[in-house]
Image 1 (spheres, helix red, strand yellow):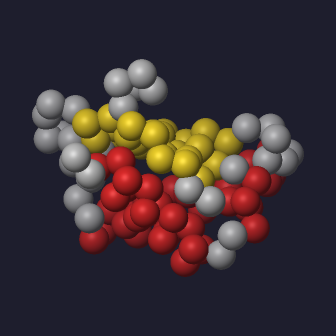
Image 2 (tube, rainbow, N blue to C red):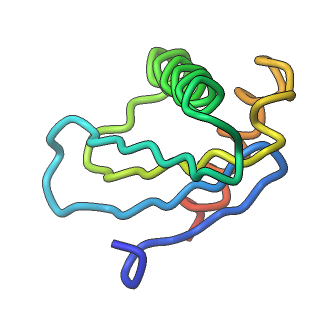
Length: 97
């Protein structure tokens, strides 16, 4: 996916996006490395990213895409509204032609 898809690093997260030829529901993966913190912190970051995708997907259909969200250290401390804005910005960067 990383070789054929697009990548958009923004301040709160990194988004990797691959457009599939079908229009099936989006498949989303989450990655948070040990650099971010211990297991409790990483799981909290993952939960926050999952909720960001849920909120944005309610407004913007993501059908036909594979997405990977990579959590960073800044994801842990960033406000939720800022994370949503970061994800929307990353989506725009990845989907522009």
